[in-house]
Image (cartoon, rainbow, N blue to C red):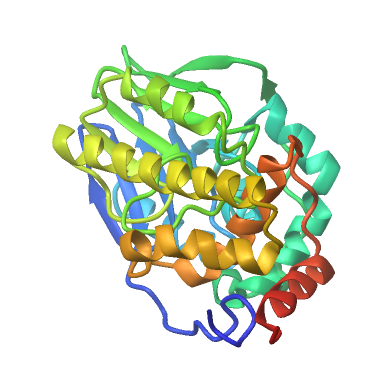
Length: 322
């Protein structure tokens, strides 16, 4: 593990790619940084996640404006983490009418939105370019419990729904059934670590089963390249399942053996490192992942709130010599 806190030393700018997936669907990916999905209908545009700051969001808006001048009417929050949602204000001048989120996501904003904002910024400042441009927390204007359908001109249906818990308790996906394109948020990753600091690890595999049952032929994960064939989609689902189940089963073993946190870290690394040490943000995520996995293994169902102070206390505690 790096001696420098989290990802403060990660300063390398990532190349973004705006690519067409189907007649109406596009991906905005960034070499392991957070991805965004775009649906361009006959009458309006929908985005799945808004990026971390208004300045960063305007880069995506510029790409969209090369293709269409239709209003960007809908912003869907795949879940509530600051790096995904705090750019929402940039879309107000582009026709934004609804910020859509699940009930679970709304509850997370109320409970921990402010703490999460400061915590994430201090962990990974490069992902929050022009942090001062953020006017405050992003609040949804439309909150659903199970899901909704949006009709975006003609017969283009876009389903926005909560398939189950995993990355957070409020996870939301955007599904375009006529084109078999799925925007998964951080429920699915590929070639990148799964951040599980606010996860429901025991629930996550069943949620992946629900996603697999959709039969998506293309999928935009939360991080990593767009998956553009059914075989790649299956690989992304399998990769995420392997990461989550290896982490949680190893934590359950460590807890059953009465290991402390540093011992658990070493035990979990022995299972995780051979499979995942080479992927994006692995070293950044692993300490937070191990802490949450050990919490859940010990019976703490509801994730504890991360604060900037708790982040650093945990990180430096794991770094300390025995």
